[in-house]
Structures are given as C-alpha cells and as structure tokens.
Image 1 (spheres, rainbow, N blue to C red):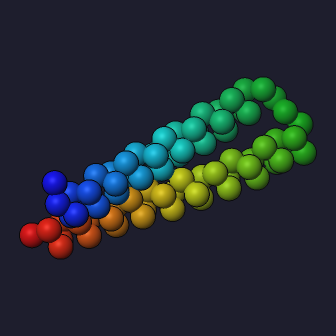
Image 2 (image 1 turned 60 degrees about the vertical axis):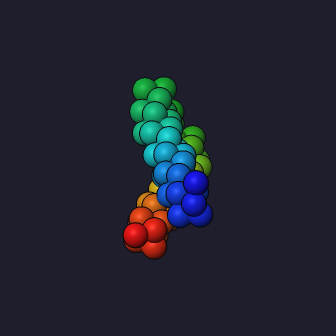
Length: 75
C-alpha cells in the first residue's frame, strides 16, 4: 500500500465522517421542528446545528480534496 493509497482512503473516511455529520444535522432539524419548540429554544438549537453543519461540510470538502490529491499524484 503506497502513501497515495493511504491519502485516498483517509480522504474517503473524512468525507464519510462529514456526510454522517450532515445527515445528523438534517435529523436534528427535523426532530426540533417536530418538537414544536418556542422561537428562542429553536433558535438556540439551530445555532448548534449550524456550527456542526459547517464543520461537517468542511470535513467533507477536505476529504474530497485529499481523495483527488491522492488520485492525481498517484498516477
């Protein structure tokens, strides 16, 4: 297994972790809407979800960049 294979698989794992985080955000928003929270409680929960969403999106992007880098440099 070469270094490029490790970069590709690490990037794929990071992308998968980011997608899992994005799915968690969707689930959290859906659950918060069904609970019928008042506006202040809903807004406080959404601030946390937005922070997790941005981190998950960044992880997905960095993972995809690692996969592409590993593919491009490995050939």
